[in-house]
Image 1: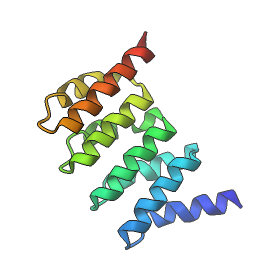
Image 2: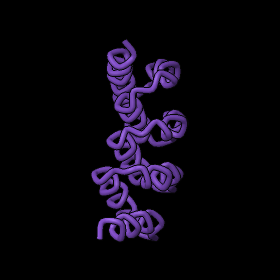
Image 3: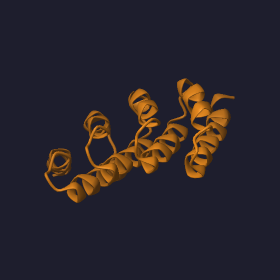
Image 4: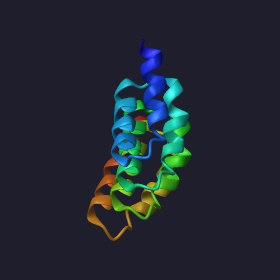
Length: 129
């Protein structure tokens, strides 16, 4: 039953309706599991910013290091909520390879991005010690 639900949610990441894709990403983040990480990483390339933002949250919630490089790339997204979501997710995952990109993100012109990058670095500092 759970496997069927996961399969359906993963399939919904490709739905034509952006809100279904967004809500599916959020649900997958709540459920978690190794099998949802790769489909969520792919969803970071979605055309809709709300979907990409929900995906950053989901990947941060799951905390799988396989998402780090894609989240680092998302720090440069055109959509600011995606940028700060990526910073928050990187802080949750706690991988040291995110330190330099997060320091760079602290120079962003939007305060929410700077704040998220700073908080992520604070979390990373605690994880690395």
